[in-house]
Length: 169
Image 1: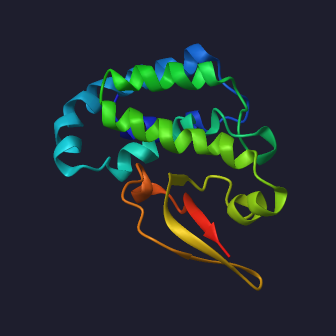
Image 2: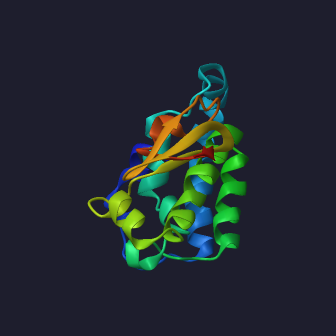
């Protein structure tokens, strides 16, 4: 199956597909993932077209809460898909794992935060850099954040980031 075929509306169903269906979608991607794996390693970045194919296949919806447009499936379903994709391109699978688990994590945040991130678009992706490389200082109305976060897999494809910082008063 070609990458463009995976962007077809057939994957835009509302009901959660079975784990077997999701793994079959991942398996269909293996030929072009394998073909592009060396280029991904050299570029040190997964192409946007790969992330969009993952989105079209519904992979970012696997762990996302139902009330936010996801399928709220088990972590095992997600891991099965990630492991299958890893047979084609480990870096692409890693980026799905990082970006996809944040869809679950975001659902655990307070309602105000979830509304801000997904209120207008429930397909927004989040990256992360949890190590507290930065500092935060409490000020009226919030915090002032400073720092440099060295790594964040998938950040090229995310609209938000979850980052760690040490809080100083």
